[in-house]
Length: 208
Image (cartoon, rainbow, N blue to C red; front, side):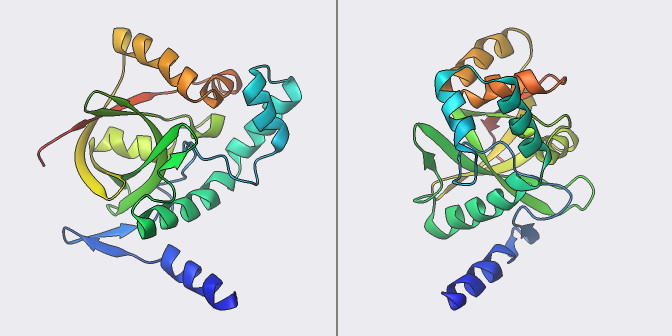
């Protein structure tokens, strides 16, 4: 077991070369992964229960807020990303009815490639993701990266797809946001605990 732990730590910090650039697995200032559909064992059972009932209490929302502002999702995301990559999505792509992808953006400060696991909703040939950041009052770094450079890559299973990102606005947002909240009820909870409008981000396949 100690050997297995050492291998996991080694693999999770490993960088890979992609198109001549360095890919860093969601570690560093550009990528706290808070928008994955995975609900790991560490998440308080009371919150999972309140999600099912659709009636979170004030205390439960405060707990959810504290988790969103903590490093919890960053640590969880490292493990999720490592497992997804190692298994080609056999582990990590599905979390019940929710599907997950790996999004790789370019760090707006570092210039390095940054990867995070995120829940996504298919919309035709596009992928819709949510910059909820676990209900935190700050935007996730991956969304700030996309605002600086909308070009990115997603991995779904073993397939990698280049994409261009844009923020859903107007009628597009009005159509997608209710679908997203029905798909992942945690989004409705996050909406209650942050003052910011949570960005809905559409990833469309590109040719780059």
